[in-house]
Amino acid sequence: MNNLEITLLDNNEQADAQLIKLSINSNVNAESLFTARVDLRSLIDWLLEKERAIREDDFPINNLNGHSLAENAYCFYESVDSDNDDAIDAMYNYRKSHCLRFACRGTNIPDIYIGRNEGEYEISKYTLDEEWRYFFDINDFFSKIERYKFSY
Image (cartoon, rainbow, N blue to C red; front, side, top):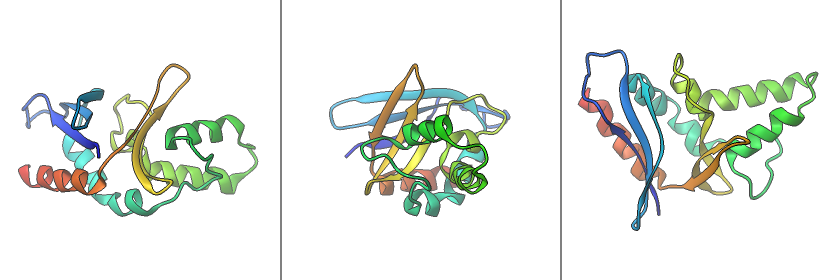
């Protein structure tokens, strides 16, 4: 099973934002998913606050089997009826708990989704230019997040 990791690349805890790398590690290799300067404390707090939703929530709209969370969100916004307030509200509420862009307000990061999809936990990104999807060990990830919390 893959491990999702957040690595602090600079150790300037006094700065408003720290340079981090999000990566997925398997027994064979490690792949960097993205690098950004974010408020690490806010990211960690958001992940811990949203842990239950990340672990338990299903995608709120018709989930296209075999598609990532990010691709499902992209398809939703490409095809949504702008008069369907219930669907738009449901998707917005889902994004608030599953899209890392909401964890890193004020930082220009892509829509990266984290959550449960078809019984597994994934992190994914989908745009016309780039797409990826990785399944990971959720328990390992949140145990590392808990350790980050206590290092501040």
